[in-house]
Image 1: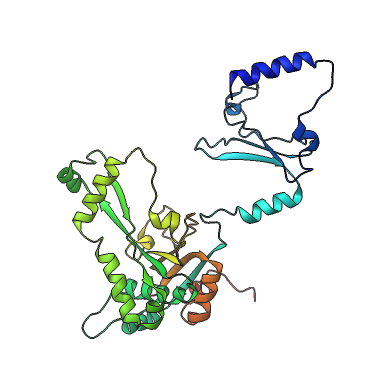
Image 2: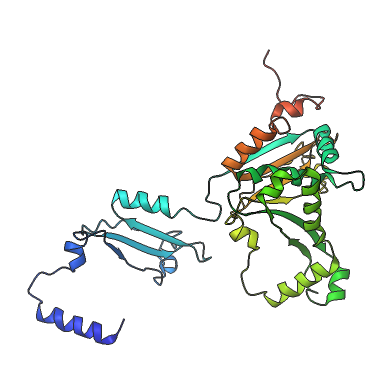
Length: 347
């Protein structure tokens, strides 16, 4: 990357102009071991080139250069968000090794998506088991405690992270009081988290786990917490940031975020064509922790629709330990309480 290097290369090329020559790595690259050439195309503005018929949506390569080393060329993605398109022309076994070893850490660990029905009587039983005579915990706290206790059985590290997600609305009054985001109106999410040892979660009663979940959530249910979060967001406004649980959630053990949507009145929303029979989610959020969202069933009888986006092995563990509580969401469930069946028999 110096002018001396390139001036010397020009002199060498001029002196050997009549002699065919190749870079050493092209001819002998992999003779002493795996070899790779990386050629950056990141500064070439392909997406701005006007071809007459318009600008390209995406540019990639097909460059089987014939050399004895692999060839890799990263370039800017057309998304414009900093993603890369990476072209590779390498040995098959090297490609398989890269795909195996460089599996993305964020959301790339075999996550699966499922939706379940949890009946009202089951929810009441969970709440009864997780509460004591002295203190009755909320249904969401008790349900979260049950999930935490189950996935702890998969833990191999000293600690395991559960997470609790709250949704709060920033109204005009709060904006006037804080003078921080006076021109903004929207939603603010806080994801407080805590950790406990696997042994404690497995050995102690469900009521103890529910108390720990309550403590995690209680820490974020204050105006001071959200006002402080507003200050932090304002101070770091131009800096991209992520919750710690999103990026590093499962590095020290299984991790789970529980986000309650039970108070959102989806079934009352009028879309013009009518109100929805059921609302569920598909939210592969890309984080390093599982994501669970319970919401009200359209039956109106207290049942829950529970969406899960978690690791396949965690899902199998939940179904093995509590399969009688989680019933897969199917059209048959809706036909139980709909006056007109959603799917008519052909008979």
